[in-house]
Length: 76
Image (cartoon, rainbow, N blue to C red; front, top):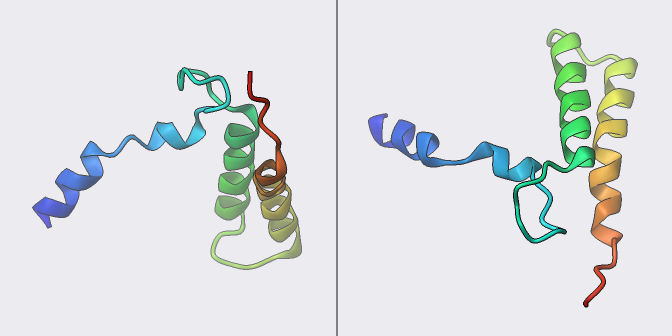
């Protein structure tokens, strides 16, 4: 159990919200942050039940992440 906790403490969960497009890794990505907040709010507001409003909010929260797979990076 202590080994699992030490591994979790060494992980940087904020890295998943940072934008890698600019190369510096310091800026937070708005689409990841806002989408994560929407999904978190939807999951906590459903209180263990699945309701259509929560499902719609979760879908809207992950939509920008799904569409970001199709972004084309410009090589300079």
